Amino acid sequence: MSVIQVFGLTPLEGEISIQGSKNAVLPMAAASLLHRGITVLTNVPVIRDVACMVDILEYLGARCCHKGDCLVIDARHITGTSIPEKYVTAMRSSIVVLSALLGRMGEGRSCYPGGCLIGARPIDLHLMALEALGAEIKEHDGLIEARCRNKEGLKGTEIHLPYPSVGATEQAILASVLAKEVTVIHGAAKEPEISQLCRFLNNMGAVICGMGTDHVMIQGVEELHDSSFRVEGDRIVAGTYAAAVMAATGSITLKEVRAAELELPLEMLKRSGASVRKDSCCRQIRIEMKKRPQPLDIRTGPYPEFPTDLQSPYMAFLASGQGTSTIVEQVFEGRFATAKALGQMGAVVETEGQRAVIKGSYPLKGADVYASDLRGGAALAVAALAAEGKTLINDCRHIERGYEDICRDMAALGADIRWLDK
Ligand code: EPZ
Image 1 (tube, rainbow, N blue to C red):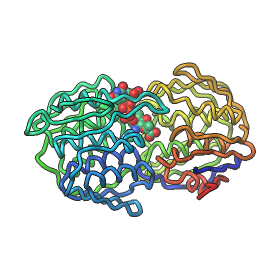
Image 2: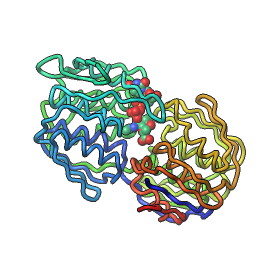
Image 3: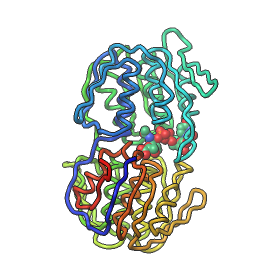
Image 4: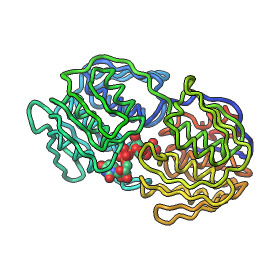
């Protein structure tokens, strides 16, 4: 079991490059199945979720090579059509492989992903989009079987998403790329990872426009071609390290990240007392924090609203600030699990339904805590930087799903943090 040890109260100083985006690369890797050839992705993070996606692709017959930050996927010979249960339960986003299988093989099977620590996470909108495109979906004993109703494959249509779900939008896009005629997704998610996925697909020969808006249009094509694409920096990892300097104080530069994707989170840092300098042409953000964080009122929501993935790291630094902050979590109903562990560290956080009230207190106290989920685990590392004495964060496998090496990065910024068993 991986454990992180942190001794807090050291200001951060220095610069780091931000790893490639997890939530961008996962659907891209799945989409590579649509092409009967080679896809090369660079700036791919070395994290557990990418390893899991590679396992799925290999299980289905692709040959993959992930060396350094480069992932080569040879999908010339795909033989499988079922995503094994162990992968769907290990990583819920593996469900997006279903649409790639439908597009490539005309059928796909997956088990039904269950609930998890951040909320129920249903997939009704994914299935609705696939059905609208001409898939027949049968569900029995927790298994989903999807098959093209028509021998010619899926057919373009108008899809109306009642909520801009990231996963359902990706599922609909992947299913439409090789479908006949035109698909329009109304109410699409506008997250930067969706725009990146569309740019990646266009680079492979797909014809997609409107990404980044509510209406994404896909003109189906007969086939794709070999391509190479560089994944952008991970805005959530960057936001986590921004939260870290808020908790620890100091001055850091984050490189290889697009400030425009973090507009509201950076604005919140300024309101909380930081000086933020964005250098868009060099993809750099400099954050300087010299005092305790001032209180904020945050509401999470679909992009461009405040990202739910940064809710826990921001809660962590606000807990070590001054005054009373509030957070309303509007995306996942179960995403306050970290509040309890923060409480063990001396934080004063009260949650009721979707609302958390955080009363800043400084310093927090080092404690023996457990990471309950990916971002919540990273939030504990953020809180530990503002804590007196030793913090041990147990069960860090969740953190390793999305952060290449949180200890390497925070230590490069001067934090006293290390893995105990690596
Ligand atoms: C993606 O999850 C991200 N995961 C999440 O990242 C992120 O928190 C989330 O988008 C929101 O930004 C990946 O990209 C791999 P949604 P996803 O579908 O696609 C409801 C991280 O830490 N909904 O936009 O699952 C759902 O219950 C994570 O990296 C339905 O009701 O998010 C939720 O309340 C975890 N029916 C809301 O929509 C559906 O069919 C948003 O979910 C689908 C979703």
